[in-house]
Length: 318
Image (tube, rainbow, N blue to C red):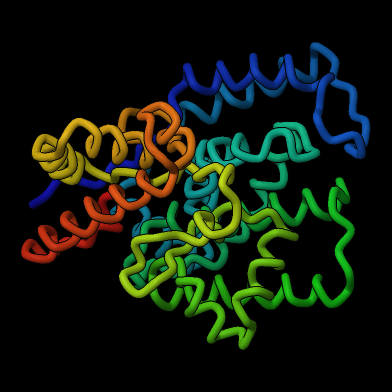
């Protein structure tokens, strides 16, 4: 019997660092249209207490998630409360990605918690997905909608708002059905929207996760590579779910050249840092952005073929 899958959660030290970052950022928000909200030392202290409290809740195993989900299905309030509390750190981890988009971290966390509540209510444990994978979409959606509605950084026409609603709904339905993010082509087919329209929709809602959707026949490239050179690759919350998968990755890395190893480690944040863009890696290595992309594609193709013999999906590891 294999060990329970453990998700890499932000530590208590990470949460304390978040507080420091937010204190220095509150007065210097980059978005001029952000509604003013002043924070006293008491407000910040309350938020710090909140972060310290949620750091005490354990990460749930699949078995525990299933048990709690069955309780929620029967209307057990304690099960619902436990599922929520044990995933509050996930909200903080995701909310940090949206700082400097017109809302401070406290508000982002509040909005993300609304998405978490929705995820708890709609989660179907019988489909075999981890709750955190499912909840991430709802949390991001809640935060992104709040940024649009509250800060009005982008003035969205009525027809575009309708397209956004359609895309978000379809994307969620496909993700629940397939157990993964749909490819850009699958989403295009399901919504009957051309790729050019989908690009405009993603630009409007600033949805980084959608820019990471796989494209192309072998699905080894992503949409963000075709949109903007400086688009930051969003750090996935679920990078490596258990030690056996981590062992596979690092054993595989030993067979790569120094350049190949550097590119893969930095592109996917395997050293614990945020994933980096093709351009930033290329600049450091003295090669072009396109050359980095080619090397990454070639290495991932090799890895995909190797894993196929073990009946393991590359997407399960990275």
